[in-house]
Image (tube, protein in one colour):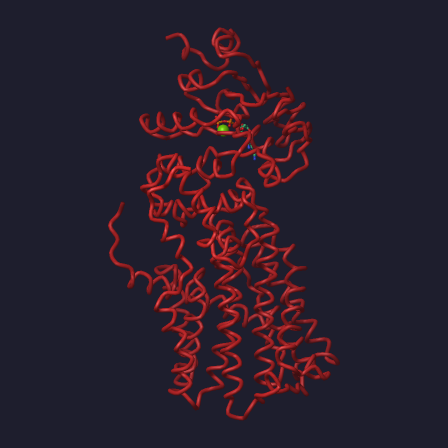
Length: 250
Length: 327
Ligand SMILES: Nc1ncnc2c1ncn2[C@@H]1O[C@H](COP(=O)(O)OP(=O)(O)OP(=O)(O)O)[C@@H](O)[C@H]1O
Ligand SMILES: [Mg+2]
């Protein structure tokens, strides 16, 4: 099977410092893949390179076999590669329903439509409302994003990405800063996504990682240390040394 | 499909006309009968309102700050003036020519404002308008330079309504053009395109991540804003049958920004109401004492920027909104 997402010797240099170093990664369709590593390991940088948020200093990115290294972010989104952000990037003054409708409209190619009101694009609005129902956000549909609790805002972060109907979804610490019970709900939602959606997850909470992932890549100092099944990673000496430390002993 | 139990009407009907809007658009009619001696001023208000609307499209919606918007106003003014001078005096044709000229300039310079943040944009727009001003100043054979463009001969509107001494035609023509252009802008801001502009203003970094081509949208918005400004400039030329160099002056750009902030950005009506309040106040106060006018204007600006960020529209919204219970 062709990997749905692949990188070849991907590197990113900031001055003399390598935030990503020679990363060659291959993700199968339908994968539940976790990307772990200590703070500053280059996880977010890797996602930035994959999505075109940053330009690589060297190397290539392939999406469904196509070289997308030179494509702009929105062009990669159009091809099914969608991300969420570690730090919320939301539309503060829009209602939740408006935000998600905006994302749906962009996916449906309505973004250049300048004559018919958004309200008349019923298919887009209905789809947005359905997504809110799935994510249990209906009660805040008409609430301004900025006045929501942080946990709910984190959910909107994901809703905006899902509205783009990703084939590959890159989640950058989706539950960071979310209270435990809400974070469980959030991960249930992620776990229930259909297999057509390939998921790459960055997460620091090892319980969550091992519950979710079927494959794990470990980044250290910008480079890929190892990649394997969760049980192999859990036993890997080097991984324990550089990253997990005591976390797995208990 | 699962049926969703949610009242969608707040979004579905977001573009419906509010009763206050109908009331607002009766004002031009009322003003005509209440101030029959001030039609020239009223026409100026309508023209400036259209100009301000054009800035609101790029600043209030797309989030592009500009200190040089008069460049497009001036281009439109000269385009319409030159067309009329050389035998193309039909007003509507003049508007179209002005819109095209300004849109072309807007399109070309839009690529300069794509890069960089607010300060860069302020300087780039200011720089472009200074260059155009100087060009108009130096090309005396063409523009008349500081003496202004003479010999602007405007034909009757639609071949029927000639511009009269009392300014009646000028007034109704300006109001009609303002209303039509407002109506189109209102459609635009409520469309998915308009929603994407609000998205860009509120979080430009997120837009590419949901698949929106940000630069292309900004180019489009800036071009449209320039075309609107060009039409406003053309209206000034046609209703005064003259073009003076100060159509492109920096002070016009700065004053416009001030008016928009006063009225409130991002609602279209803020641009219109801000213009009305500003020009009426200017008219009444500067007669009494020009120095005081500047003083109070400055004070109002400082107060608004510090305490009422959404301007007059923000205040009106606060007054009209029922006290909301936090959810
Ligand atoms: N734009 C930038 N300019 C300079 N250095 C950067 C830039 N972006 C990231 N870095 C550096 O690159 C390294 C990797 O950062 P990155 O954000 O990818 O880490 P991370 O693995 O996501 O960490 P965390 O778990 O804290 O989110 C860090 O040392 C960071 O300081
Ligand atoms: Mg990170």
